[in-house]
Image (cartoon, rainbow, N blue to C red; front, top):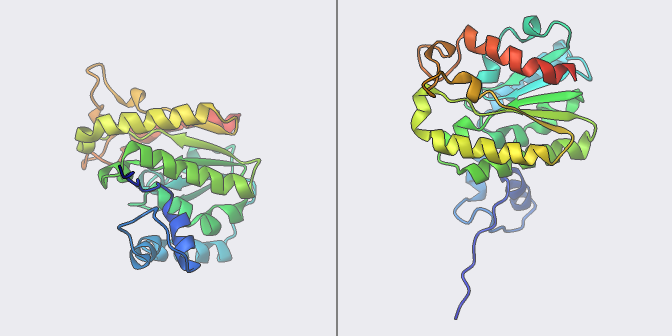
Length: 235
């Protein structure tokens, strides 16, 4: 009787580092070094724009860093919403959790943030990743941050119930549950559950919290997030 070998799940940044060092890995048996390199550099223009901004207008050390996908990138009122806090916005639209891992050395660790607020995962599910992989990539982000900045607290905003992706809601719920369970085990982690507050009495997404594309949020949606994120910043 022969045993069947199962691939080991690991974050893309780790597999890329292993391949770059000249070793092989079975973390991604169908993924080549070229594909990993392409995925790791797909937001190069956005990251370089952040770095240029950092050189001309260095952000404050010890601030609260908001990072993640388009819901963070489009949160243009962060400074006005949290006037008692120094905030940095490093959201880049279309990104997945693993992209925040890949670019942490460039747009996370240099700021030495006191707190990090992360929103990502919806694009991951939309691209076919399992809830378990979403958790694995979030854990990779936490591990990278804590290795360099052990005192930094991290809050994960739950994946929102976007009307445009409502068919994926079961996977979204499961990813949120896995990350919430993980956060409960670590004193440096928080889970900000926006999901139930974005539903109406019919248990469906409230349309007025989203824009015309039914994916990104309206000003009313951001007002709700301000209410829910605020207590984490005040801790």
